[in-house]
Length: 56
Image (cartoon, rainbow, N blue to C red):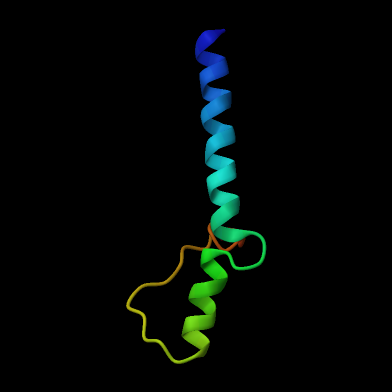
C-alpha cells in the first residue's frame, strides 16, 4: 500500500510538471515555437509525445 501511494504521488508530480511544459499560455513548448517563428535556428526537434501528438 505504501509503495502504491508513492507511485501515485510520483505520477501526479510527473503529470503536473509535464502540463507546465506543454499546456497553458506561455508554456515552454509554445515559447520554443515562437522563437522558431522569429527565425531562431534549432538543431533538435521536440519529441511528438511532448507536443501532444501520438507516435505512429
